[in-house]
Amino acid sequence: MVQIFLDTASLSEIEEFVKWGVADGVTTNQKIFLSEGGVDFKQRILDICDLVHGPISVETTKSTVSDLLAEGREYASWHKNVVVKVAMYGDGRGLQVVNQLSKMGIRTNMTVMMTYNQLILAAKAGASYVSLFYNRSKEAGENPLQIIRDYVATAKESGLASRLIVGSIRTPEDVSVSMAAGAHILTVPTKILRQMPSNKRSEETIAEFDKAWQDFLAIKK
Ligand code: E4P
Picture 1 (cartoon, rainbow, N blue to C red):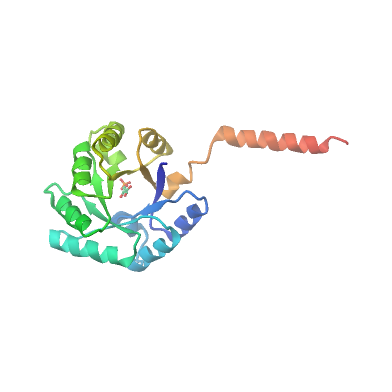
Picture 2 (picture 1 turned 45 degrees about the vertical axis):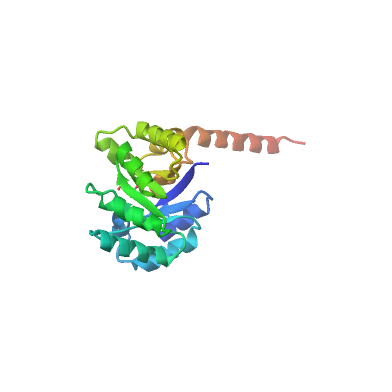
């Protein structure tokens, strides 16, 4: 069953979509927190953990392997549902951090990935989740839909356990094509999620049925 994570740190937005019954988890990053203004970082993560009883991705921000490991262990200690996000650095330090955290039993989400090779390395390093940035991958000249298909096929054939999250979503169509390509999880900004139930023909049909019902009620018995 495909899962939807909310790509936000806004409590009001999370509360809104939890009511829809569609929120399986949450992903956050430094840019998302910048848009939240001067909130208390740890308290906001804990508040999110209270709202969504699923994986809550919290991104590491340090630079060295030792600092990233310490930061990841700290975040993981905050709540059982915290998943530690580690970026795919070109020098492999992120892979080293993910590999060590996974050996400690800490769930990780390897992130900021644009290519098939990056996803495979992250999965082999032991990442619980591997995040493909759909639109940024496209901007990098890649074919993210083919990458999704290839990763899902390779993971199935090779028994890779890492679940593929597709992020960097900018339209409802990005969601549907990624899901259709086999993505395990879509992490969707709330402004996109809010558009997804809407369809002009659905609204027209609802109005047509409403009128028919009023006409039915008006028939003199
Ligand atoms: C999710 O985990 C990513 O951090 C997020 O979807 C990135 O989106 P952007 O490419 O719009 O910054």
